[in-house]
Image (cartoon, rainbow, N blue to C red; front, side, top):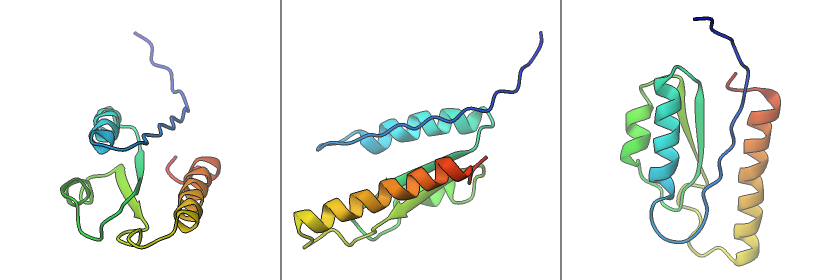
Length: 102
């Protein structure tokens, strides 16, 4: 069986109210990491505390979780939240375009 090296990136965005976004993202990310791929999960976090998944993957490479805006959403106006979302996506774009995890 021959093996081909393929340089690919996948961007998955999970949004919306309710539960399941982090779980869905972790499922895809852990599967990729299990196959030896490098993974970065950029998480917009509403609270400033260490989530269990963050503590777990902090010691396992090539899987990284970056939490942006930790605990700073409370009291933000809608305009401030939109700015924060744009900054979060700008960081994700930088990661993809500059090949930070490749």
